[in-house]
Length: 367
Image (cartoon, rainbow, N blue to C red; front, side, top):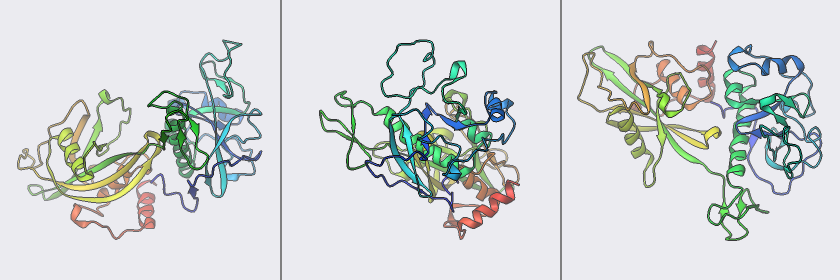
C-alpha cells in the first residue's frame, strides 16, 4: 500500500520553530498540483495532456544533496524570504511547505499585492517564474508513474497538511485570522482561543464475500463509482463510505453496504487501515459476508444498486475479477488477497501473511 515505504521512513513528529537550510526540500502546492523539477525534455512532456504523455517520462537528472527528494525545489532555489513551515522529516531530512499563491491571472494584473505569498507560475498561460519547475497534479503523477511510491506517499501526506493550513486560515467560530501554535502542530485563534488540529476523517472499505452453492464458487462484490458522484475512477473498487456521527465502524459497514447495494451483511471482521491524505481519510478495511435469501438465477444475492452512488455492482470469482492499475490502495490489497485466493471469507482472518508476503503477491500480479 501507499504507506508501505520501507526502507524509507516518514516521521510526522512536529518540531515548532525549525528553520530550513539552503538544501532543505520545499513542497509547493497549487490546489492538488505540486511543483516538480523537470529538465527541458521532461517539461515538454509535462505540458502535454495526461493521456498524451509517455509512461515514466524522466524527471530532471540534476540531484541536490537530499538525494531521493531531488524532484522538489530546495529552499535555496525558491525566491528569498518565501514563507515556509516545517512539515515532517523523510529519511532524516527536514521537509518544508511554502506559503504559495498561484493565480490564473497573476502575470496579467501587475501591481496587485500578494503579500508574502510566492507567485510561482501562471498555469493557464504556461509561463514559469521558477525556471526548471512545472506543476503536475498528484492524480497524474500516480497514474503516469512519474514518481516512486514512497515519493508519492510523501506528497500525499504533505497535501493533507497543506489543505489543512489553507482551509483554516480563518477561525470557523469568529472569523479571526488564525496563528500557528508555538508548542504543537495546531492553529490557534487569538480572539476566541479555539485550537484547530489537522483533520482526519474515518471511513470504511468493505469487501463483501459469499459462497455460491449453485456454482460451488466463492465470489466478491465489486463496484464502480457513478459519474454522478464526480469520481473519475474507472476501475473496480469495493463498497466504501464515511462514518456518521454516533456510529461504530461495524454499523457504518452495515449501513454503507445496505445503502449502496441493498444487501444485509454478517460476520464483519476488521482487516487493516490506511492513511489516504488526498481526501484526509483514515481508511479501515473490513471483510464480511452477504446475508440475503433473495437470490438471482445464478444463485447470487440480488443487488439493488443505488445509481446515485454506483454504476456497477457485480459478483465475481477470483478468475473473473481485475485489479486496479497500481498497488497503492487498501481497496486493491483486499481485492488482491481474494483474487490470489488467500482469503475466501471473513472467518479466515487474521491472515498469516507478513508484509513481504503481500509484496510477493504484488510482484506476481503486477509483472
